[in-house]
Image (cartoon, rainbow, N blue to C red; front, top):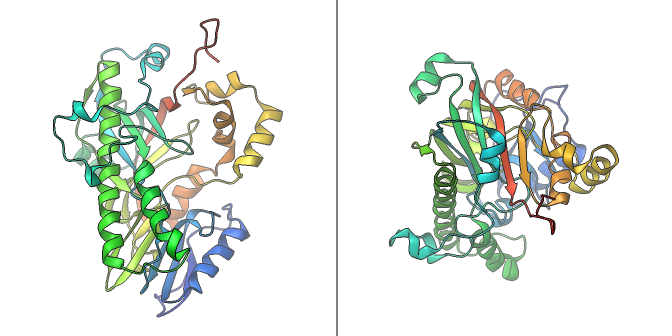
Length: 372
């Protein structure tokens, strides 16, 4: 579905940046038009990973003269960071067994007086559920050698990809708004933005702490992030509020667009303009609801089949339901998403990555000492 327009209209327009072969649910497009009808809304840009969310589309950038916290959601500052990592000997089975428990928070006392945004220490250094993950991957293909060289990436390099957000802090900020105003506008935009910015900073810190925890557990050397960009946020742009829900800043940013635990991901150079909300996609985007993925997956796959992906990578996940809900088949083809971004002039692929180990949640030993 493609609804290209030559210029950004002044009010209430919707543009979907997806080709005819892309999987875009009509309910997601309907949500875009529902959002476009909100007071103050100027433009809604749907990315090629667009899919329906709870009350608002995921994979969209929304420009409005009114600030709507529900369009950002509870996981404020959720994003993806990519860190170069060096490991002397890569044996995936051994490394997978050494991943730390990223459901267990770090002790704030170990942070040596580090500035913790909002003073929120609960869940610090944890990954969360849903589509969040930490992945050890290899640079599979260099697509733009010049740009990759500037980032210090070459084929065969190892990278650590961390996808998570502000955890309970973001939930607390949204709840404080919705308990009083529901899905309505922010009564005090400045106060909301101040709290929002703290959650964004917390998300960056959280991703860094997880990367350090994994590197320490694996005996690895961690480099500075190649990119660390959030895709759930709102900010002031040209005198209006640009909300992003599952959409990453695409105006001069390098962005890791996640595939699935069984496919490639792509690091792209974004150069999206105002019609696209200065944004690019954040991932492959769901094509099945979690309930459908669980039902269909149980009919087709065993748990052990889902622990090793079609590309030979390993999945660390002690939650059987989550294994099915997040199966690669529940998502759109990442190559189609990247192709749409490229065809619409929103991004240029730089490198692709291939997973070796994807961590979702800690494995749980059985009573006999084995793994579930």
